[in-house]
Amino acid sequence: MKYHLPLTHPLLQTVDISVTLSGLKILDEVSIGIPEGSVTGLIGPNGAGKTTVFNVISGFVKPDSGKVKFDGKRLRHIKTHQLTKMGISRTLQGVGLFPSMSALENVMLGASVQARSGIVSNALAMPWVDAQQRRIREHAEAVMAELGVLEDAHRFPGDVPYPVQKRIALARALVSDPKVLLLDEPAGGISAGDMADLGRLIRSWVPERTVLLVEHHMELVMGVCDLIWVLDAGKVIAAGSPEEVRNDPAVLAAYLGEEVDV
Ligand SMILES: Nc1ncnc2c1ncn2[C@@H]1O[C@H](COP(=O)(O)OP(=O)(O)OP(=O)(O)O)[C@@H](O)[C@H]1O
Ligand SMILES: [Mg+2]
Image 1 (tube, helix red, strand yellow):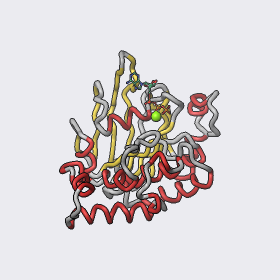
Image 2 (image 1 turned 90 degrees about the vertical axis):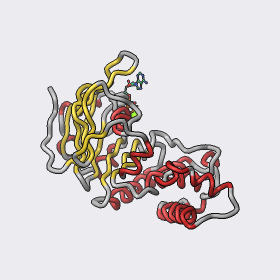
Image 3 (image 1 turned 120 degrees about the vertical axis):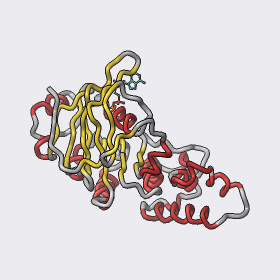
Image 4 (image 1 turned 45 degrees about the vertical axis):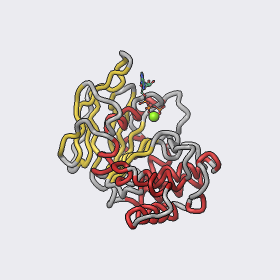
């Protein structure tokens, strides 16, 4: 059975996305919608295909069939820097920071201008810094301050605690001032206190930004999401409010044996 949920204003949408990797069907006609101004969750057991959905949306993985629509328009052959320019930004599962660049340099990489002109590397190598380069740096610093990691600006990712690395990665995603943020397990490896802060932070972005959140921590998902899609073995098996999803027998069955408190 295919799951359909009527959506009034999906800003971002996958329509019947199917993906085969190494001969295995990873996604099977996955249709999800992310209403504008919402925090929308995408949950499911390990290996369900959540990251693959992100990879399709961001153009890392080409689907066998189906389409991705953003703001009513079909996205085709998207490259990462084009995504940033369109106002879509993502974090990677884990951290995904460049280990040999400082935290600040990593965050500056998230600015869309950089992706086109290599301007950050110029800024870092040259004794002079023109107005545009300075603006990128100042903005990156402001976003890092907002996320409480400015004091780590000149440290390397490997030299700061894991939760700080996660925040630096968030800052990199935010620095382009995206309309849509795709967050792949932002709470992985962080403490309960940090998670509560993260929940407040995510809610503070809407409705100006729209968030798609992949997360295993159910208390975070249930606490911050307006709408949740549930994926299991490459198929959407449920969708609805946190309350609806929490009590859905198909969801409980999918999570059977997993160490999560749905
Ligand atoms: N390049 C690939 N080739 C073959 N199989 C792959 C490839 N990438 C992912 N897979 C498989 O596709 C399935 C979905 O992977 P995906 O990473 O999307 O799951 P996920 O829901 O994000 O899981 P997790 O919660 O563990 O992050 C898994 O079974 C995975 O092993
Ligand atoms: Mg994943």
